[in-house]
Image 1: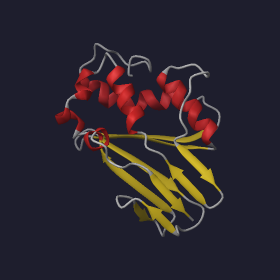
Image 2: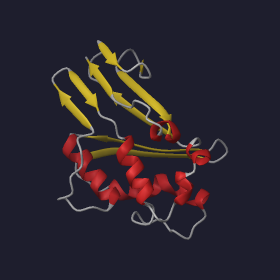
Image 3: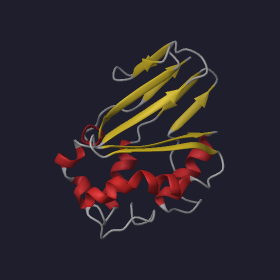
Image 4: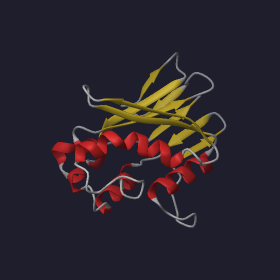
Length: 168
């Protein structure tokens, strides 16, 4: 919700999208456990991204709560479960859809034509090479130490399996 993060609901949609990576970075820069925040904006290619590292699931939850403008008592599901030699990244599509559909400042995001333009990507970096990945759309790269899953916002809303189970 751009207005909660300092965005302007009166700005044209493309201007809001261009400003979004900076708004996200500004919103999470003071969260303890969040580091290495990077933003990228490439206007000619239409590429806008934000990436960050988090120490543990608690730091990730704090960042998500801050971005959503919610208090600490709000229940945020576990997006990622980390166990010894295993990581499970759960489906975040329902939560993203709920956040976008409740946003009054950006009704364009519910338009399927617009959703085709927005790519959602998760990259999980591992300390050791992957032994097994359970999701046919997940790509193992970087010598087996990274797992990538991506799709468009339209695919995510359409029920694309965004759950990844990794053994390493």
